[in-house]
Length: 87
Image (cartoon, rainbow, N blue to C red; front, side, top):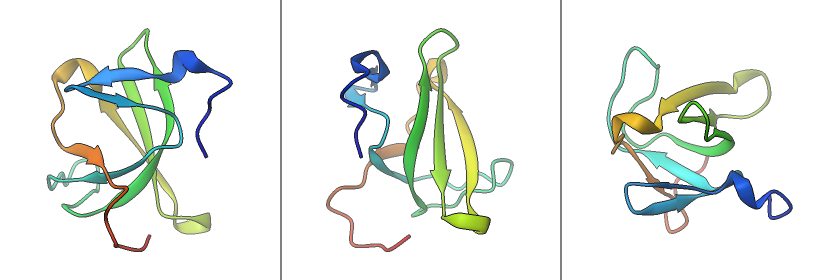
């Protein structure tokens, strides 16, 4: 569910306008963050002051929050609207 009430939650990253609630897919294995290529999650928070974007992977007790630094030109996230993978 997109947060249209808070239009400041939009952040342009690598020519993409991510919003809170966007479904995204991770495209790079990162053992430190505990995410693998193909993991699907939802953007939970965008902090424009620090350049941090938080993605929630999984649901309920299995959910984990992973933070990405937008200032690092992070290319491991992309939209996942057309992906068929179930989370």
